[in-house]
Amino acid sequence: MQSLPVFLMLRGRPVILTGAGEAADAKRRLLERAGARIVGEGDEAMLAIVADGDEAAVARLKVRGILVNATDRPDLCDFTLPAIIDRDPVLIAIGTGGASAGLAKALRQRIEALLPQRLGALATALHGARAAIRARWPEASARRRAIDAGLAAGGPIDLMRDDAADGVPLWLAEQGDVAASRFVHISLLSGDPDDLTLRAARLLGEADRIYHAPEVPAAILDRARADAVRVPASAPPADPGEGLSLWLALPR
Image 1 (cartoon, rainbow, N blue to C red):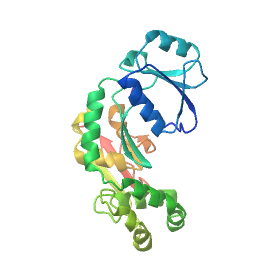
Image 2 (image 1 turned 180 degrees about the vertical axis):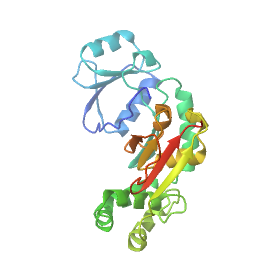
Image 3 (image 1 turned 45 degrees about the vertical axis):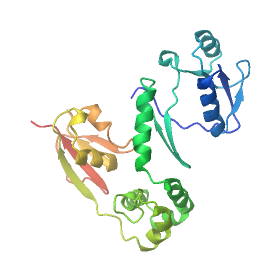
């Protein structure tokens, strides 16, 4: 991973925009949608977009300690602007590190066609139910597993259903105990993450903790949730703990 994706709260904050033409107009519309206050090069701001890729303007801004995006000049960029899927308040950002805006756009179009229009409504419903969810599952690990099970394919609030938001109250009222703890052994095909099976990739994205042989490469472990506990070990543990735990090992 060459950069860290972040979502910046720009409402009411100044952002410098320089340049003219279609590229500048597109960036202006994007900043206005985010609620930014667009200012000129001489004004104070923490971020700037140089829509014409002017190297001199980029240099002047960077000397002032301002983070700069230079359109079509990834070599000059401190940050890049992703392709965006907007299901407010859900935002999905797709970036290529400036390698290909066309590829990011194509990915956005493919993914957007898959997502229900009311995905944002589901997020809003879950936000409104936070107190009830905490009361229903006081323990954080149980709460996480219950939400994962509810949102999963075929679950009572399956995120791919357009009416999932309407099902949140019923899910809270009827949801039984969270899924029992599981310990799954995965024999990796190789140390290349491209060789992960769909099942292995899915389990890595869901696991609470990952026990792994020391030789399992970081490239594989990086496919797991960022907050999943990683435990190097010479053998599978006798007591892996609650939730979903995995044992990863390379072929001998």
